[in-house]
Length: 390
Image (cartoon, rainbow, N blue to C red; front, side):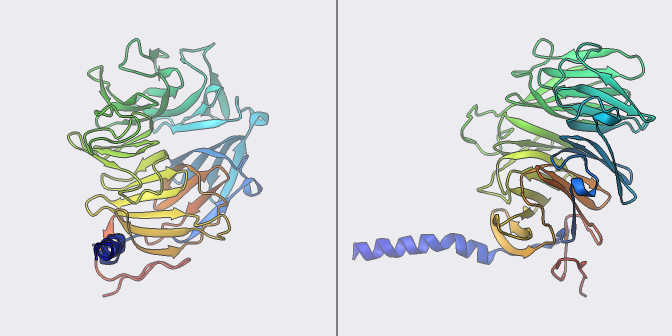
């Protein structure tokens, strides 16, 4: 009798996840990118390994393992070392709104300024650059901020002055600065420090604020939403006064007072291993993981859309719509990239671009809407736009 009762209890417990998934309903319809186009060396890229992307008006810059590329009016133009590019691996890109100059982070080669068809090269030996291994750049007013493996450098393009920030003059537990972002409205710079959490610099006040994982545990997130989810941060994205921070152990959101953490077991994240996160608004962020792209499209309802390959044999990718970790439905999309290890992404208008270890892809944003659309909406089939129903 007891044995039968235990078996029955186990059966009921096993059904709980299924019951939860069945009972999940969308509060509104998220936009699903269904129409995709892929690009490789044969299409004009200097290399298929994509490290960085930067939208620039109606143009897109792409940094690859073998050079720099520009997509404009449906065509690719590329620059390699044979064309004057000082170093072949372009790991970061920033464009000055004021001058139009393109600044390039070179992985092992310092920094290059591309202007008027000419490359100017800055290294440890001829400038105030703290290290030649550069991961990312951002431009705030007249300053170019450069994240390197040995600290951060700041270059004023008007005065020519350099400043260096390391553990000697900034609260860096580690000096491996993995990513950087800035905000003109708040006049602040944000650093993702590998093993050092997130650093926030107030330019006007000349003051640093550091954010760490408060529980101090490396293996687990001991207390949920108590702060930054982990100190091994890989990127920062500040938009609409919200800070999104990615780590190799999940995602964090910070509104200046409250933290919210996301992991793959309790959210729509495909994986906790996040290479890069790009905020689209205060409520939407796209996460580049080792197992696909996961977009939190609506913070309030915890609605996600993830894009991934279901198997190595799959001819095209799948989009999964979920509420938290509970799947609502899946549908095919016209994306055929051979792997889903996603390194970077950016938005060109309503279009979405993603860069992987083997190829680049653009998703058409025709008919795009932010967040959720309420009311009855037809499913997005590959190659078709959604049509709202009365």
